[in-house]
Image (cartoon, rainbow, N blue to C red; front, side, top):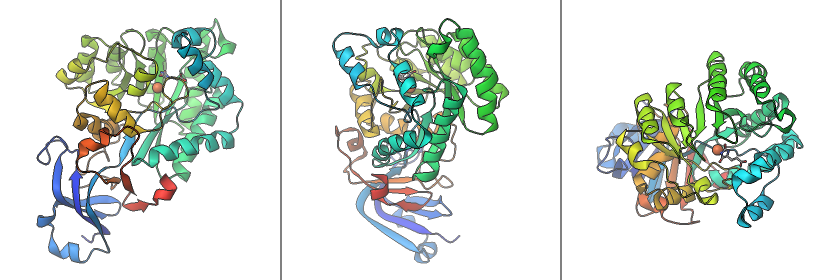
Length: 413
Ligand code: DI6
Ligand code: FE
């Protein structure tokens, strides 16, 4: 087979299970060949097939740097109007996230701001946030709706997310989060709002192919487990896979509920029980941990890391980029927080933004450096992979490749 390009003089953290000599699937002096946007060959440079290598059009000498799969931020609320810096001040003054939400602030204030902006305005506000992520080697990002909370505005948010995927050098996976909060016009009529989500929003969003997954916020201040089940049933009817904001502020059994519905992932999980972790392990549901929200809300209850490990639950890490609980624009900072706050190893953290993040999005075609996977690559000026989780506010990314094509860093960053 003829190769389009070849990367040499580079150390690879393949993140492929069982590959290489260490927890990163490391190959010290590696070569990676790409054909038709996919990885065609990877291995020690010394074993590179000579004939194909000679006829390769573009050979990139990486000068002894490192290469990883392109990073995947598998949980964001990146599209929103306004910001909540004022609420940040209130919380520092002593008000809790839940008190602010119950008083009509929190998510609802972002709903008002998001409804007030048109698609162009939302797009323009999201672009600089997205650029910050892309500048750190992110090649796939998930974006949720959930600040529209009526049919027109939820669809508006999802269209903006799709447009970001078309116009920016990144793959966008969209998630319909209509069951994020109760909009003010439905106060006292929560069942009727769930009807709207299931019977009107879901079919229209499915018809326009606007959502790759459905999510819900199962929490005392949001939707009950029974309401969540209704949303999941509607999603199943529409043929859309599910994921869940589960057990973030209290244990409502969200992790087990997600597992019962074969959810791709359950997210946050600070209050998840051991039984919940076991159920996720059996179902193959990915645990998406969000250290940014843990940090910003000054949470002290840790997600059940030991139980997740024990039950073989794949762990992903994401930014949860949102204006309230995690105004985070750096996935690398989340790697540090996953290690420092949650005691993940740097290798677990990196698997959390590559292999396991891909799985949380149901994307079997990426997340590791293996033959046949997409050639989404990030190049780093680092001495060892742990450095990706080490710096606070550092960015050693020096190159991004998407489907085998170099992304201009000026475009990404
Ligand atoms: N949990 C979160 O941390 C975000 N959504 C959710 O269900 C926060 C969203 C916000 O505060 O705007
Ligand atoms: Fe979230």
